[in-house]
Length: 421
Image 1 (cartoon, rainbow, N blue to C red):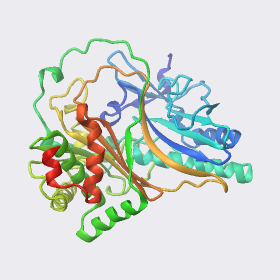
Image 2 (cartoon, rainbow, N blue to C red; image 1 turned 30 degrees about the vertical axis):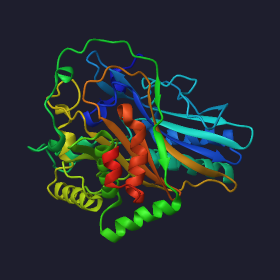
Image 3 (tube, rainbow, N blue to C red; image 1 turned 120 degrees about the vertical axis):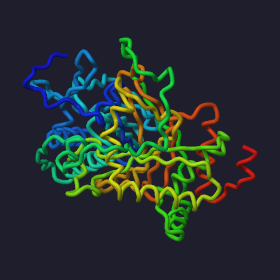
Image 4 (cartoon, rainbow, N blue to C red; image 1 turned 45 degrees about the vertical axis):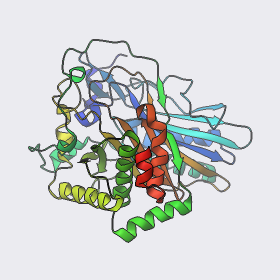
């Protein structure tokens, strides 16, 4: 697609660049009970595009596959897609999703019995979990305003900045430690830097993680367990994931990498939509998974120490060493764990309920990777009082992981079970 030099906003930074190769869109999807007003939804998405103009920008690639953020120029934005179908399915939209056209798409699937599914896809280069939740909340707020008043007030915001740019504004430069040392491995031959042969993009691919949802009472007990023992919920879930992984795969050493939202940890703090991917990476590895609470404490201590030392924000400044054609390190074999915390109840009109929430990923044009992949990705969030545990990848025994993780959290796992597994 053609673009003019004057339309260039900036070259994407490494924290954003790693999502360009596969054209990775992160999706927030909900099932809707009650009558969904398609016209109001379309108006809400149009308002979201006006309020957050980054969504109608484009990403183009130069001959070296470097992603460049470009203004839309004279291209008319693509509006919401609305069609009839099965709301229980999260689908690849029937219309093409192309980051060279725009960076967010809305797909709504309606059924005749007052049920629907609405999925907002946003390119991961310009929005992380915190940013996506903010956009999704705004969408439903605009929808509610239109249904209740017929109008939507939405002022336009500036383009969000990368974490690298925001750190530079605060005088934070690259130090000697990446914070990923606990899980750093030597590059193997398959990962070694060399000439990346050109390859045509493959067909779009949707990843809908397998899920287990705890009941509200089980979720409350997990929160109470964390409170009683003085550990964070994130530490407790991470410890449970490491123990479950060690049990299922019978490994002596386990390591994980998980994002840490830095918006409220930087000075001055950053609002949800002011940055693109505003998370540093924390890493933890251990050979001792014997006690859940003690492991959660060690994970929490490691995180606090790294935050105090300023190491978490350093990870992004070392990304060129781990991702892309200039990488010199690998983190192959680690568990990636993303805990997006408690998802707020979205504002909706009377008679409408958003009764489920899940995170999906869509690669618009997947290509061979230029970096190490996680052994497995675990996604965690809480919505309407229910803790959701989800999984991507994991190999032959992957189906055993989520039940083992849930058992760790609900107190039904035993070390005898671990040995037999």
